[in-house]
Image (cartoon, rainbow, N blue to C red; front, side):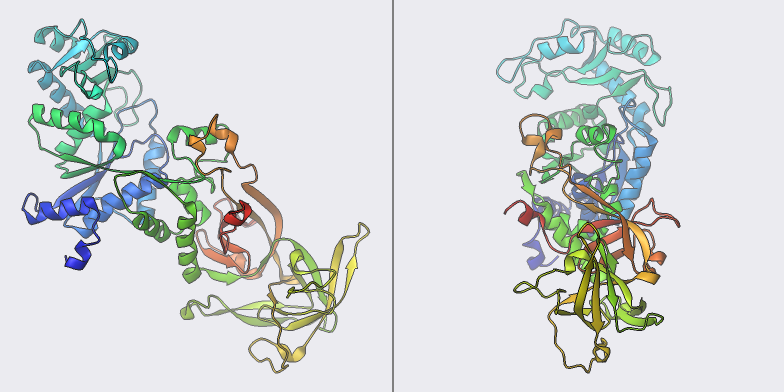
Amino acid sequence: MSDSSTESLNFIEEIIENDLKTGKYSQIITRFPPEPNGYLHLGHASSICLNFGLTKTFPGYTNLRFDDTNPSTEETEYVDSIKEDIKWLGFEWKHEFYASDYFDMLYDFAVKLIKNNLAYVDDSTSEEIAIMKGSPVQPGTDSPYRTRSVEENLDLFSRMKAGEFADGSRTLRAKIDMKHTNMLMRDPVLYRIKKAHHHRTGDKWCIYPMYDFAHGQSDSIENISHSICTMEFIPHRELYDWLIEKLEIYPSHQYEFARRNVNYTVTSKRKLLQLVTDNYVESWDDPRMPTISGLRRRGYPPSAIRNFCERIGIGKRENLVDIGLLEFFVREDLNKSASRVMAVLEPIQLTISNYPSEQTELLPIENNPEDEASGQREVPFSNKLWIEREDFKEVMEKKWFRLAPGAMVRLKGAYIVKCTDFKKDIQGNISEIICEYIPESKSGSDTSGINVKGTIHWVSQIHAATAEVRLYDRLFKVENPAAEEGDFLDYINHDSLQIISKAYIEPSLLDAELGQAFQFIRKGYFVLDKNSNSDKLIFNRTVTLKDNWAKVQGK
């Protein structure tokens, strides 16, 4: 690694580079350890990019390990979605492990602690244990069961495993120090009784290790060299190290980095689940959700998410990141890759009075001017078109470069037209615009000598297909809904979804494929939704062409 690249290393990369230089490790091993109790979100994307990115930069590999120690909240559905999300983001794990793979070993570790008089079975309730813990300014008090003999603890722990006792009636606690300044070191619970069906082990177990007991030991079993967590686990590191030391196992080490929270959303799994169960959104992969599956369904390219995670980087202080930065990377990516197509979302008829009514032309239009290799497609043109209602005004205004009586505009890839008249329906709404075209003004062979400042898109009426178009916006009206007073649901943006039930699209979009990105000219970037079928096409707006949110918010 060159000196110039060294200057740009984050603090974890600096630690790893030094560990490799000093020979502490010949390779590094990281892991991504999600709990399968929900769908991954943007916060997880940062951790994924960090853990897998480190082993792309340095020699080594990354494991995927599911922390499945809480059977009542975990499902195979979540396991499958997590694996799909990681692969979609562009990463591959070397080994797929589960904490449940190690249940027998973890049980043996617990027995070893009991035999060394470093753990005991406690009959206290969770409320009683909480009181015994004391407070940050008041030392805790010993449990009356702390002095049980090794033999009695071994017997009771074995009977806990055998299912003799009711849920919550007993726990296994580490015997450390009830006066410790770190409250997590005040005889933490290592095992609890939970008679629940596990998604992998079934009903084999009725006792389950706590996260703090399973986490470090699983890291050690896998010889993880750099166990990377978020900052809230700093107080847990002391227990992590204590357990590894007392069990005399491979000394994995924990490192912490700060979360990068994104504005106008929430990433708490509990809150995300509430959005789904209370029907504020359609599902976990609703395109307004910050879940990776939601971003995928909305049309966000995985490379844009990776670039976003790299740009925000990692540090030791939490901050709130503007979602506009992610949208910037989405636009940058899609501008290079998305085909330009024409779709009219709020239609009004345009009739070209001097164009033969029986005539149809196939006009060549570039698929993507940013990509020469993308080629051209042919778009049908006729004398009756759909254009956007917003592209016409009854009265010409200063600096208005679209259609109005007497005004001229270019139809994208076609001809220059001049508005000669318009019609209204019985309600007084404009129902039709009448124009004449300039035959010599055809795009690509214009000899008219006429220059116009405005270009608008269109769709031929007789050739148009129809589609439902969904326009998505921020799910919340405030930057940090979780930090506001009251319920976070009070800040839901009820205008976050606008459905256009019948938009007109050019016929090439009938061949759109799931996940294929398009730029609807002048309207934004769109993607075909998974619920589309041959009878009904649905397009989701990924992002607008420009950041309109700041303008809406008066920023």
